[in-house]
Image (tube, rainbow, N blue to C red; front, side, top):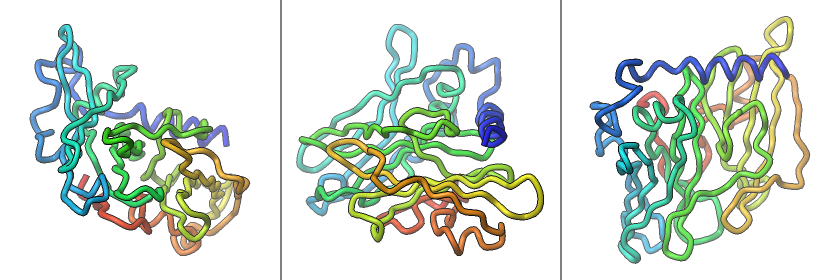
Length: 249
């Protein structure tokens, strides 16, 4: 397990999205290629059946970029929630790669939740969930996020042969539930250890469900057939709604 932690930290730290000369004092809050069209996604947030909007935007405050997830619904208009950029890596990810990637049904409240990719590593892509509450967009906290992720209040997808992540809806397990899994190789051979954790929406947040952490060993060739959360690049393969193809990111 310690090896998996080290591999993920290296994978996340290997991000090379922004040239060093521009990352120290960028003139713009977003890189040239990260247009509003790329940072915006349409879906039904408030449950009235209309096409609402969610996007990643920024404002300059005292010369520094502050990033927000914005939402605009037909019923309540526009609202926003701040996304903290705590270090150079997170600022680079928000500037170059962050954007909504899915509108999916998670909880029992009418409307769908929006998944927003917030970090961009060499292959691992952590993301957070946001939802509408009382007419405003809010971030959904994640209780007891596994330490290997090293990213607060985020799930993740993607990875490589050294470490893979998958996040998916788990409607059959329990209502309002997602499964968050990681897979890493055993010391020898083609077998992988798979660790699965379940999270359930309570109020505005995710909490660990009563289902204990599951650990299984499986051949790499059978990983996706045994554990469907690793399909579609590990991104919400069985959720109801609209999910971006990871190959387009």
